[in-house]
Image 1 (spheres, rainbow, N blue to C red):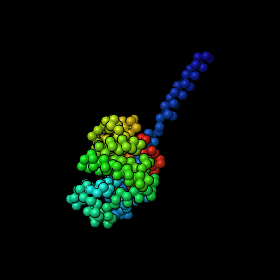
Image 2: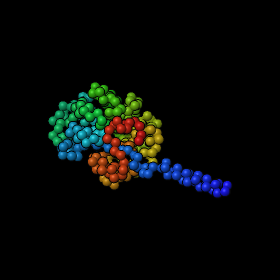
Image 3: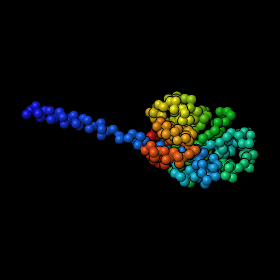
Image 4: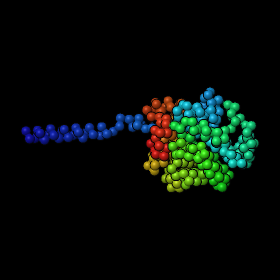
Length: 287
């Protein structure tokens, strides 16, 4: 009788032990992931925006569609006007060598003039739930870039947007990223070049990486390493279905794309929750 009780007790304990890992393990790990969509140069790829990149209409469409963030590019003219435009030249003229008046007649694809940063931020203020992903384009020298950073901070302060819950920064300029990291340590600053691992980037005071998706294909452990270092992660510019699916598996925090509606559908397919509001997850805390 005693032997039977011992065997019965042993079997009960064995059953409990087998049940514990099953209860603790998530049914689908990826279903617990979250990812934010960043509209590349705004949600320009639609009729409402007139298919015009970096336009005010593209920003408004990104805001109205509820994407986590909207990315935009900023250059500085010779007379220190900050303008929202991707290329370093307009009609063959280097932007930083000419005053803003030289470019006032230029029109975007939807007929809008090139927005100044002031005009862009005024639209940005209207939707506080949309993260403004501010790309500072590289300029000719560290001195010029320092002035660019200073004017950026002044503009954000003027518009009441110098807030890490409203704005994050990205740049291909290592100097700009370092400078922003020094001056604004509470903000997410992401380096774009893709030529350094997360530990190297963090060691110089930059707290995020935003790399072309092919970099994460070559270094699939970098997103995980970055999360351990409490860095933010983003992948650009991801447009094809097969690339989007692969980036989702890399578990970066944000995905920058020209096709945000397509990414939205593929996140649903992968059972990954789309983060639509900056209040849903901190811009400076990894998912």
